[in-house]
Length: 74
Image (cartoon, rainbow, N blue to C red; front, side, top):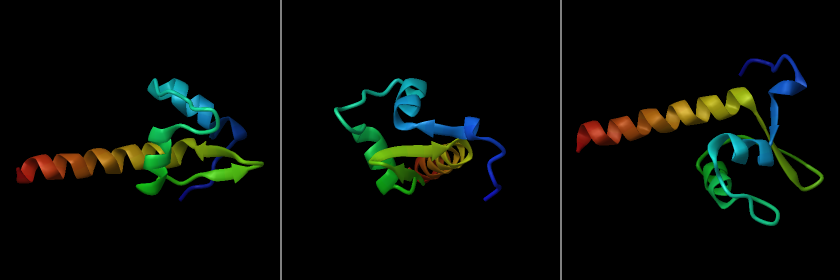
């Protein structure tokens, strides 16, 4: 993993929800919780979850690669 160059590359859970059009619950987003279980890396600070931009991109690319692999097999 490359080191992030600035804190601008750190997204809050709310930022991530806005970028992907997801609904935020009272504390967390259910979809993002599933992504975390699926391997999305995050940092927790005072009960809030934050995500490095590069980790989100890597997770999405890997997810897409797995989905394409499944489609090719089917």
